[in-house]
Length: 294
Image 1 (cartoon, helix red, strand yellow):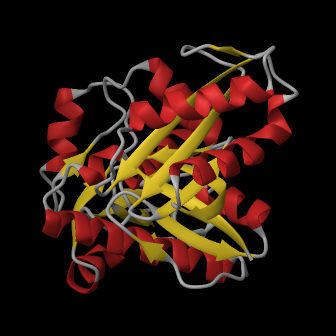
Image 2 (cartoon, helix red, strand yellow):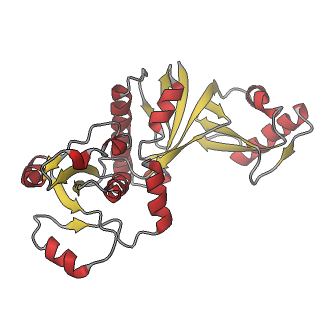
Image 3 (cartoon, helix red, strand yellow):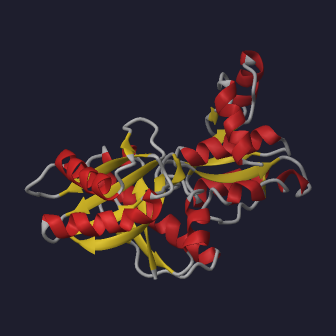
């Protein structure tokens, strides 16, 4: 099986130990659910403070699914080795990166360490960079926007080498924040509102005042960001049940424009507070969300 390295978003690593464990546990659960639904074979998911590791025989499909799970900064296919003597580790790293070194003109080395070592990350960068230059003298080091970045993650006595990353969706793991009911009528804006609430870690439960299921036909576009779990559309009159059974604590409305009088009149009749994540949202963020939902 091949090994995938997952970097959670930096916001998780800044949490207290208790909160960080909760966020990592929820992210791990979401990955397992998504892999099971998409029938991706994998061995045990190993979770640490700053890295997750998954062994799978289908890395391509796994990365496609993982890049849509909120709470992930990046995913990489890695080569794992042991931290032996400095010379041996440098040689193995140089050999690993050689396959791509011939295809580029500039590079940089980026080392991250967890644990105690008798060298700094910068010292390892310099030594490995020198070894690569010895083998490929035509290459040049370029710290900003190089053709290729050679990544080295050293965790205690283990070394993980990779030269490519798949960008994740960032955000917070779904299920770490409150549960909300998303008001659905069939518009594109409500998908964006749902996307933004998922990104902030909320579970969403779509509801509609319309009698048909047609308003929910676009909800499939949101499911890949919900660990591939189905979003079941319910009628608005089921809201009390959602409050009782799912602990839903707010409504989300996809309003785009600020309409104080209309909002006050609508909100006063609801059982829950109403959030409007699209009001005053900048166009770049709105368009970016729409692009992900296409």
